[in-house]
Length: 172
Ligand code: ADP
Image (cartoon, rainbow, N blue to C red; front, side, top):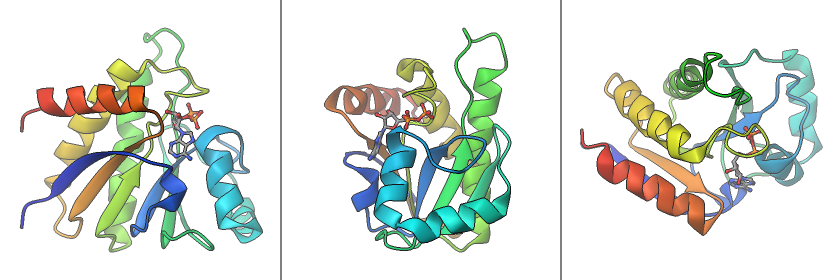
């Protein structure tokens, strides 16, 4: 069965997929942007579980339950802060997508949605980040027999247009 990769314009907290990915910070204790939205929708039990995880390194990821979210799981990953592009940012961003997919496979996830990691408060240019996101996910999925659908969830119409363009240019 072919794997579906699509691009959506939505609030990721509303998606009824097996797992959503959170663009978290290294403390895993919540923050602004998508992280704040996920914690607000999931409720306080998510923060309790995150506290027990003891943080997460940049480029790595951790699994929790989704609590009050429609999604069963949240995969928290810590993207790199953009420092001009010469500080290993693309390698770390790739690692976020790869680790999230690996964790999703281990948890038996069939449908997964990503936000645009690092392109908000962390300042990674979305034109560059979208290319890394799509090519890394496509490569990582070639090792998966469980995941059937991956969505890139864009919060604005401008972000959606950038991801659509990147998806068109990344022909498998
Ligand atoms: P980072 O710190 O990794 O940059 P942000 O949360 O600041 O994380 O931004 C990452 C992306 O998530 C941005 O493109 C932002 O517009 C988007 N975003 C913010 N809230 C939501 C939401 N509820 N659903 C989906 N995407 C969101």
